[in-house]
Length: 281
Image 1 (cartoon, rainbow, N blue to C red):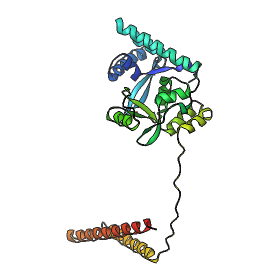
Image 2: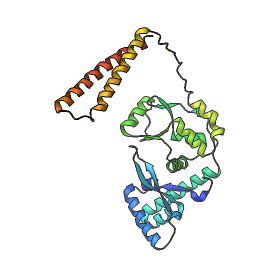
Image 3: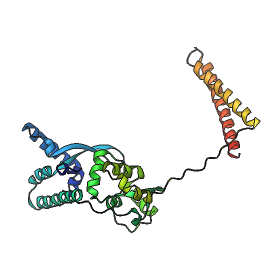
Image 4: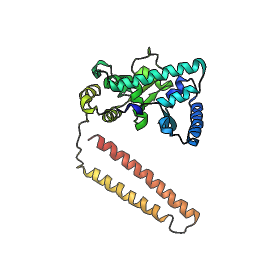
């Protein structure tokens, strides 16, 4: 990450800047790659293959595009659209370079309100970037390259997230959320774990282990039920093991299976009763 020559934009972002379908951009890059390969020009100077996970968890193809690669693509676009793309990608690379060369001062996590997703405390990508003093797009690149787990909420999931956190007035069309384990992974990748450990611990509440309650099973009736359950399970296991071994009539096989089913139901009732008795101890 410290090598500025390795800065890239992923093809998803480039497609968004161009107002173009990602699949369409992938086809164009594949075509360009064929031309460059024929001319024995290294593709890694322009782009390299990578993957990302969509909101459904599927692993899909994308490209990580260098500044030179963006210049290559820009030369294929004329008029206003080409000019806007050139200005946008130049600004984006400038932001990333500035973020790496002059990281902003980290913002304390306590200055942000905690947000949750389905009851679990998580951190938004914007808050995480502010705490780390980096540009969100820089962190996004690392997340894609290292397949760091994140939760992308859109559509109905976004509505649920906003309701859960009383954020219905927010106009964002999506949020990227990171649970604590993912935040720790990113801090380790950037060598910031020791520096920001206290701040992160302040944001994520400590997990309190529930008190362990020891149950002493010293009831004679409980031992008797356990013994009964064990014997029935042994019998069921024996019937099932011998079922495919011996040749029997269809009627005999069905009778055995009916016996197994009846014993299984009876055993289940014993187990349920034992469970309820133990819960009351």
